[in-house]
Amino acid sequence: MDTSITARSSRPAHADTRISPGPKSGAPAPGPGVPPSPQARIAASDRVPGPVWVIAAVFVAAELAVSSRYGFMQDELYFLVAGHHLAFGYVDQPPLAPLLTRITDLAGVSPTAIRILPALAGGVIVVAAAALAALFGAGRPGRVLAALTTACAPVLLAAAHYANTTPLDLLAWALVLLCVARALLRDRPRWWLGAGLAAGLGLEADNLVALLILALAVGILLGRHRPVLRTKWPWLAAGVAAAIWAPNLAWEAAHGWPQLAMASALHHENSSPADYLAGLPAQLLYPGLLVIPLLVAGFGRLWRNPELRFLAVAVTLVVIYVLAWVPGKGYYTDGMMPAVLAAGSVSAERWIARARRPGLRRGVVLAAPLVGMAVLLPYILPVLPVGALHRVAHVQQDAATMTDTVGWPQLTRAVAAQDAALARAGQAPTSVFAGYYGEAAALQVLGSGDRLPPVLSGQNAYWMWGPGQASDRTVLVVDALSQLRPYFASCRRLTTFYAPDQVPNDWTGLQIGVCTGPAASWRTLWPHLKQYE
Picture (tube, one colour):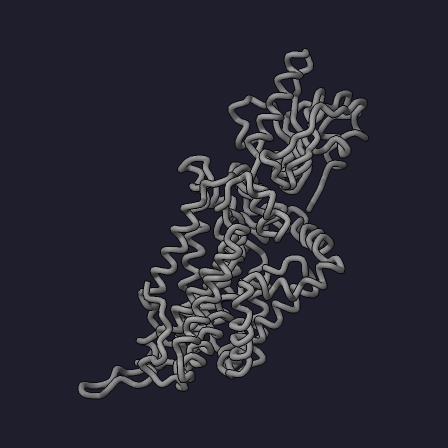
C-alpha cells in the first residue's frame, strides 16, 4: 500500500486554487491548440488516488473478518424483529435500518450477514474523506492521509461493526457534505440533487441528519456562498429530501410524534454534570487521541479560508448543539469528522512540504492514526478472546458496547430452561415479558427453536406492537419483576442469569421469574407498562 506522504506534489505546496469554483456547466470547450483552463485542470485532478481505494478495501475486509466473533448487539436483534413489523416509522428510529436488516436477513440470521452493509458504509466514508480533501486543496499525499486517518478513527471502526442506525447516519453526513462541497467549490449545481437524495435517505435512517441540514443552511447563509440560495438548486435538493422523508413524517404525525418523547428521554439520560464535563473531550477523542492536532488544524483551516467557512460554521453549530443538549453522546458530532480531517490533511501535507527533513514529519503524521488505532483496537473490535473481556470492559464506552454482544444465546437457553421446568410442574407459561427490548428481541430471534410462548415488552416499539392475543395467566418474566409486581397477585424469582466468562455487561445479573394472578388482562394493563428510553 502506497501511503507515503511525499515532500512535494505536482503543484506548489502553497497553491490553494483547488478550492476555486470550476467552469460553469454551460461554458464552451476550449478550441484546438488552446490549453485547458486552470479550473478544468482542477476539476480533472479531483480524482481519488489508488491507495485510498486500497485503504477502504482493507477497512471493509477487516470489519468483515471479525464480524462473526462474539455475537449480536442488542440493536441488531431489535432491528431483526422490527424488520418483521415493517412500517414507515418506529418509536425510536425511522424505517431504513430495520428495512435493510430485514433484507440482509434473507442471507441467514447471522452477525456477518447483517454487518456487510455497515462495513461497506464505512468504506465509502473513507473514500469520501479523501474526495473532500481533494476539494479542499490536498494533493495525492493529503488525500491518502485523509483516508488513512478516517479509516483508523475509533468511532468509525466501532460504528461500522454494528448494523444499527449509526453507520447509515455517518454515511449520510459524509455524502451530503461531499455533494454540497462539490456543488459550491466546483460550481457543479447538479450535485445539489445528490445532496438532497443523500439527506432524504439519511433522514429515513436517523433524524440527526436534520441537524446537519440546518447547520449547513446557516453556514451558507452567513458566508460568501449565500448567493447560491437565490438559485433553484438548493431548494430542489430540499424538495428531494422532504419527499423522501415525508412517509416517516406522516407516520410520526399519525402516532403522536413519539420520537419527540424519545428525544426528551435521550436528553435526560445524557445530560448529567459528568456528561457536560466530559462532553468536549469526548468529541475530540472519538476520532483518535493522536490525531487531535490534525482535527485542530482542520478546524482552523475551515475558519481561515472564506471558501470553506460555511463548513466551519456548520461544525461549530453541531458541536455546540451536542454540548448543550446531549453531551453524553459525544459521537453525535462525528458526522463532520471526514470534513475536518480532510481539511487537516491539507495542513499536514503543507507542513511536511515546508520541512528541511520532511521524512521525519511524514513518519509522525502517518504513525499517529496507526498507533492510536493499534492501542485501542481491543476496545472497539472483537479481537480478544471472550475470556479476556472482563479486563477491558471498564475502560471506555465502545468496549462496553462490545461486551454487550456476549451472552445472548446463554440467556435464551436459561429462559427456555425455566419455561420447560414450569411446564413440567404443570404451570406452563402463557407469555414471556422482558424489561428491555434487547432481551425480548434475543428471545424471539435466538429462541425460535425452543418454542417459547409469545414474547412481549413494554419498551419502545415493543409497547406499540402491543400484547396481541397473548395470555397473562402465567408470565415468565425476564428483568422485569419489579415492573410487573404491582399488577399480579404473585411474582417470584426463579433464577439469576450471569453472562459467561465473567463478562461485565448489561445482561449479567438478570432476574428470571414468574408472575401469576393478573389484576387485569394484558390489554388493560398495557398503558401502564409503557417505557420510552
